[in-house]
Image 1 (spheres, rainbow, N blue to C red):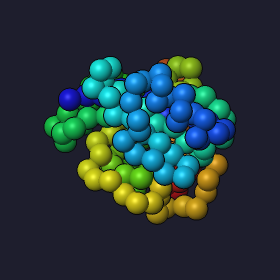
Image 2 (image 1 turned 90 degrees about the vertical axis):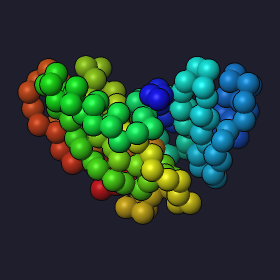
Image 3 (image 1 turned 30 degrees about the vertical axis):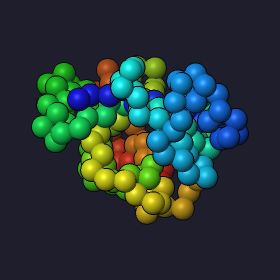
Length: 157
């Protein structure tokens, strides 16, 4: 199954949890002091909010898959379509162990393509930074510019 992922930076976590719980008609499936996540089947979405983003609003978007084969298929599609992709690989970020890759859309919004293998009790083991919501890579250019992609930064650098 594929699920749309959205990560939104918020200023006041409890206020945002109340709002999104009412909007979505469900309580978060995961709550941490700086993070909350809803996993919905209708619509099929993984919505995460945190106080870690440098700006408020959409931090990044993504496509979450359940199976390794689905992740491989998406990687093949991105490669065949000449989209520069940063393959982060296995990482511990956002209270989960995942296998991630990143692309940058024409508007500059990072998209992660990932599969979560297991949950974690810490946000990340790669950094103590709190000024980034996730393990976004530093992308050098928009997809149509034919420039390379740098390694991930933020919590996974």
